[in-house]
Image 1 (cartoon, rainbow, N blue to C red):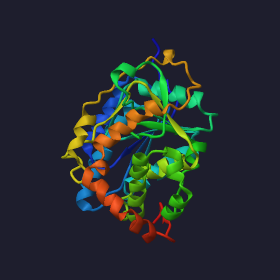
Image 2 (image 1 turned 135 degrees about the vertical axis):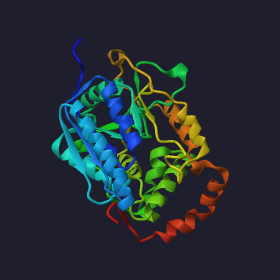
Image 3 (image 1 turned 180 degrees about the horizontal axis):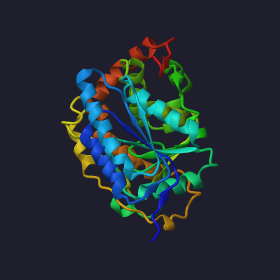
Image 4 (image 1 turned 180 degrees about the vertical axis):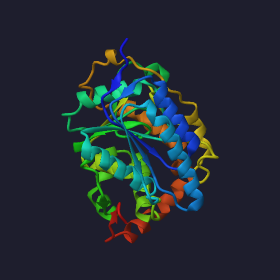
Length: 325
């Protein structure tokens, strides 16, 4: 049997975690697939001690890159932070290519994730409503099958997109103007969902340099366009970075729920309903996982948000947030 060649260029984002670097590269090798092109992007160090860790990651990549047919390394000289490094790396790849599959060093994927992305990128390339392809599925087992569904929650634990869709990325916004236009309310039509996303938008407005979340900007862009993401009905990717040792600052005990999720496989030949409509009942399972695992939904946090929302809103009136500031 011929080895499958992944047509879409793959971008993998690294920083200073050598063990995670080994895990994701070995994961790629274990698929036994060939890759038409792989980009490895490594963020720069924050200090001299950090330089040693980043150098270890570069050394690991150098030792493994012979396993792949065509590899390009993007090595940052200075630390951009996760947000800027991911956005600029995707910008770079999509300047040269029409499509990209994006992974981070703490992602693990099923081999079928790549077949799935290749197929979905081809099937939906002319669909103006579809902005990305995701690998996750949080549906209960009794609803899982070899099919797809549409979601308003573009999970970025292994995902893919097109140059023309990424070109619509919002790179500056006014929190007050978004609220005034009711963009979030019109999109989600659900109070809990609206609260959740407003919280993340506010965080972006107040985030320190290099501390922002790139995924909030992508979600906002999709909301502006009233877009959707395609997900498999079987889970093809997992987040391998939900450990306290790996992420002590942002770790939460509720992450144990996601750690139980495993990679599955999917028979892409059985996927048939490419004209599927958005089903809010299916999408509620995605949001249930968010509610169970995101600290935003802890009772005291919700109370604080309700009390502080109006002062925060008017405190940001007249201000604008940009990815570059």
